[in-house]
Structure formats: structure tokens, C-alpha cells
Length: 181
Image (cartoon, rainbow, N blue to C red; front, side):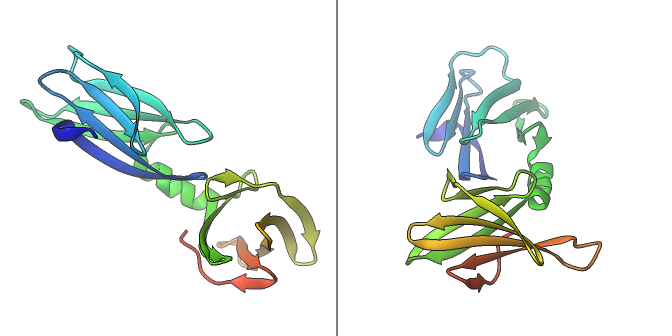
């Protein structure tokens, strides 16, 4: 979609899924185009200043994103992406601490579930879920449904100060092993 001017591509995992951000920079025309998941969200033609920033939002929560365009000598440019005010790697590192992701099969279909640890919001395949939280003997349980399936995220103490709280996913009463984060 962006043709020969495509200079940068990033995949950004947010609560509502992974978003592909593509950036085209026409260094002879000054054109700047940003596409998210193949949809154009920013287009500027004939920019005389070839360096600078392009700011836009990504995902259901309208997370702020900024592409930084810097000259690195001659007619070469360097492109970096900031998400929520942090460089992409710092955002990814912080996100690994504040969210937990499971990829599993529910009713024969692939399902991506994300728990936002700070808000206890649960997202499933890009949709924020209606949840019910309750206290249990060994921690807390967050219940929700995916189709006809009962889902629960259990939070219990690991018993170790360093690892803190451990989150488990329970599908129809069975603990699901593993996670991607």
C-alpha cells in the first residue's frame, strides 16, 4: 500500500491486539504516510522539513504513538517509534510487567486474552470483556465468558517476594498451561 517509500515497520502489542504500523517517507517529495493495520491514518504531502515527528493514536484505547524522523548524515534518516511517551523497547519491557497474555484454543478457535494487571481489565481478541471479580481463599478470581465457555483468571501469591503475584488462566474448570508474556 505504501510502495517504494516504505522506510519503517513496527508490530505493537496492545490490549486489543497486535497493530502493524507502517511508515512511508518520501525524502524527495517530503511525503509522510502512516498506516495502521493497512489503513491510512496520516498523510502529509510536500513537507519541506524532512525531519521531525508524526503523532497519532493506536488501538481501541487511543494510545499515543510518535514516529521520530532524524537525519543521520547526508540524505540518510533514522526512524524510531515511541508508544505512550516511551521508546518502543521500554514500552514493551514495561508492558510485560503490567500485563499478562494467554493464547489458547476456546471452542476450537484461537483466542488471545490479555489481563491488564493495574486495572484488572480483561481483553479477548480485541474486545474488552465484562468481568466479575471475587475474593477466593488463595487470592482473587476474575470471571468472564467466551461464547459458552466459562473463563477465570486466578491471582495468587507466589509465596516469593521477588515474583509476587502469579496469574493462572482457567477454562471450563481446567488450568491452562503457559503464556506468551
